[in-house]
Amino acid sequence: MYNSSTIPFKCKDDYSLILQLSKYFGNAGYLGIGLFLHVSILRIILFVERKNFSKSSFFQIYIMDSIASVYLLSADIFYVRLFMYIPPLCPIVSPFFWDPSFISKFIYATMNHCRFAKSLAQIFMVLNRMSCVLIPADYEIMWKKLTPISRFIIALLPFSGTWNIWISRVYSFRTPSGGFAMDYIKNVSWAALSLFQSIFVLTALGFTIICTSITLFKLIVLPDRIKSAEKSLCFTSIFISCCFLIVGATQVAFVTCTVCRTFEYLYFMYMLSYWTFDVFNVGTAVVMILTNKQLRDSIFHFKEKDTNGTASVSAAPQNENKADNIWEQRT
Image (cartoon, rainbow, N blue to C red; front, side, top):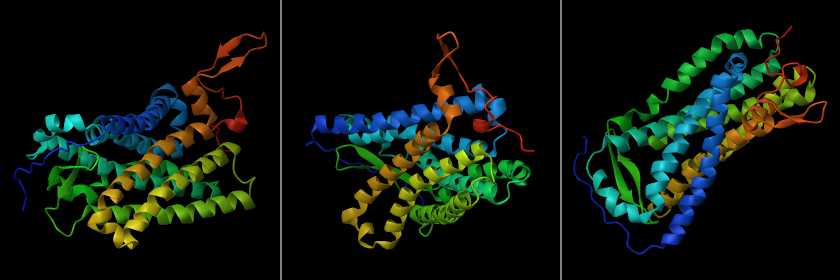
């Protein structure tokens, strides 16, 4: 039965404001960098170089991951971490969330929806790279059909893991840091969020280990089988997979470690899930920028010297460089 009662709590009075502000601005600093990079990547892929990037199935899948990251990072900076780490806001804001609130339910449910979506995007990205090295001749034709399907699945399948949140009571509770955070009271007792999270993350972890191992093996054994640009995307996927392994390892620890699920360590595991997803959210953007020259040049507008020695700004790399051109047509 849905719990609609008022759930008040007393805000913490004894806290170090300087310490908590340092925590918030420290978190907001690296999360803000990730948010800037993801927004910049989406701007380049969807608008500035849309005609070119639309030809890459990998980037069309990565868009879904990046959109989910933008929401997660924005919600963390402007809601979750703000109210968690700045105690003076607690007595002012928290009474608005003692009663059922659609705002907190929407933010909490959508954040978990985006987490599930990122796990699904991870599955399709590693499958995309594995098929690229296994069947390079048919890869483009196959993923031309699979890309719309994969994006549809990434967008909608997470509802299978968050439906119980939408019909349950989302409430706020005081955190040891002096602020408050969100949790929910299950309306359907067996449909725990941790159960669905384990299914999504551990399934993605299995795909990641298998597909990435095959991709890496093929790149070592048959280095000349695929184009250099596709090979670069394979290494991009491998590095992104390394970021996801941190999320997977945390979920494995939560499932296998009985002590970790006790009340004494519950808040630590709660925060650990945020920190590991921080690495995944920010890490995917950093990896993409560091490993992809086209995006890096377009975002930061690197200057190049012309024949006269004057500086010129290149908003995007030139397509004449076939070795680095991800949009080169297969023959």
